Image (cartoon, rainbow, N blue to C red):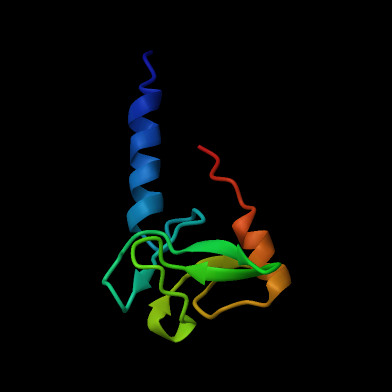
Amino acid sequence: MDHNIPAVISVIQYIYDNIMYAELNTRSDYCQVCGFEGEIKTVEDNGKMVWECPNCGNRNENKMNVARRTCGYIGTNFWNQGRTQEISERVLHL
């Protein structure tokens, strides 16, 4: 039996990139300033973790949609510094 691991990884990566909830820690982010639909990243600013659109640099949380799994549920609000730090340190395991 042959195993096409690259194909499986490709499917999982597609799910991770495009579907908000598929029994994986997926993302579904949107920047209301520039229309970016990729992953909104966390960056450090003077010792504090902040959310930033990698396309336009928007840091206004009122003008972006971010969804992350927290405590087993999908959260679409912004989190305290401890939870934001934990989210930013997550590793994608394929």
